[in-house]
Length: 82
Image (cartoon, rainbow, N blue to C red):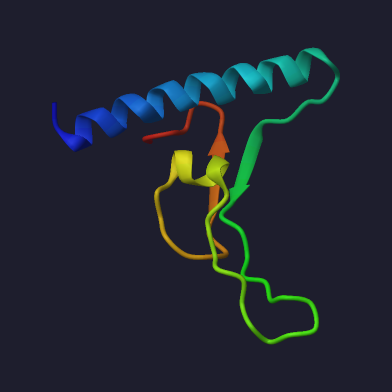
């Protein structure tokens, strides 16, 4: 199994899980058709100019293993891999 085929399978599983969550939200009166994942932002310690070591939010990293702050991953139902 190659990295590319394994990641493709992972994305299909994530698409299923996110699609299921969107269906459930629609059933409960919250009609969303997309989800936005943010990697996070750089922050500093209170009263200091020293940056807190950055780590991407896990929900973002599961979809897009891209390092660094302020990235967005937008999921629209049925559009992963298209």
